[in-house]
Image (tube, rainbow, N blue to C red; front, side, top):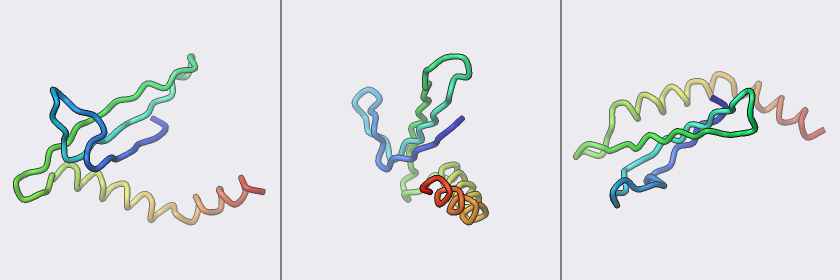
Length: 80
C-alpha cells in the first residue's frame, strides 16, 4: 500500500447509490508499472456515524500526529 484517500461523500456509486464516505487504497505492484486501487464504500448509521470509519480516522490521525515532524523535515529536504 502506498496511499490512502478518504472521500466524503463517496466518489463512486454502487447501483446508483452514493455512500456517506469512501476509502480508496492505492497499491504499487512491485513488478509492473500499475497502480491497483481498492475502494471501500462506507455507510453511516442513522445518527451519522460509522464506528469502523471513526476508528480508521483515529488511527490515521494518530500516525499523522506522531510523525508530523518527520514528514515536515522530509518535505523540506525534497524541496531543496
